[in-house]
Image: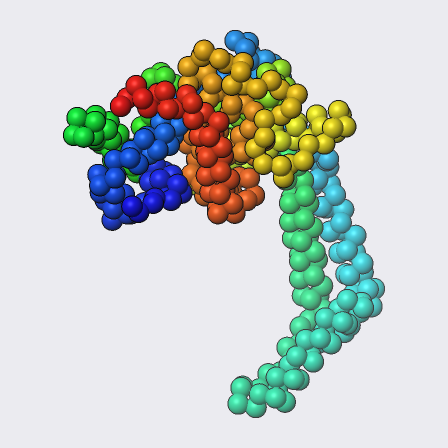
Length: 189
Length: 229
């Protein structure tokens, strides 16, 4: 008589057997009814475990859980570090300081607007040099490309552009930093 | 011979018929659920969303629905009603705090039972550390010496109550696996993931546990089967 492995019975009960295996097991039981009792023991245990009653906590369990939950925090927008007025004040101040530093030498030195740019500040100097180097590199290494010439930018236009750039960057930075604090909301549960 | 075999065949056919129906979902067919609860849980995801939006009564509904499952897992692992209640409470508080991390890629119940199992195991470890009595976890299914033999205690009782008593004496991991598999309706894969075990490990443990239960309860099971035959 062919013996059936206990594991196979459990696989059968767990629904893991293929259709062929299932049919094979069922036909084996048909042929060997003495196996039926052993099979029924496993089946009964499986069924009893499936319908086993669950334990019930005390009637006040839900209330206890709800009481133990952390207190809900009031959702209020957090105060910004600076008020809106102060924010604009700082943006203006930063722009003015940088603007003065950049523009003052141009006015003091009184170069005409038509004159080519003269590096008056280290920042201008560095930027101008870098740009010239890039142009030079392109002209030397990419002869097929149209030849570039360093544009002659008047000092006042250059300085004004720098002031605007600094203003825009400061505005963006301030808005990002303060905006996050002003508008971010976190749901605390 | 035929008159002896016939009832066996009849019983077998009844079981096969029943089993064929339930083969694909063997455990789900037997689960009886409160109708109101199941209606409520139809919109489980909606309920979770409401909790996330700050609706506390929605969480209360979730607690009411799952309290027995969670409490059962905790009790089977901790073997004490008071401790299980405390652990189950911790489970729900944890779930409430971390609900925003729950993703819809798994069932809420699977996630909840995994939290319940881990919390109960943590409580058990703390308990052991306090009492300085470290049980050997590798020891496989043995009824603890300090506990009375459940079979003696339940003399004259039916299979259901004896089974409950014997399951209550299973070691933590085995008790957890049986509970998650049968009461939690989790698949072997889900259990393995939750318990940080391999699928084959879970299968082996489940098989051995059921074999041990079968041996321990053979007297009661035979009586039950005899009635059927």
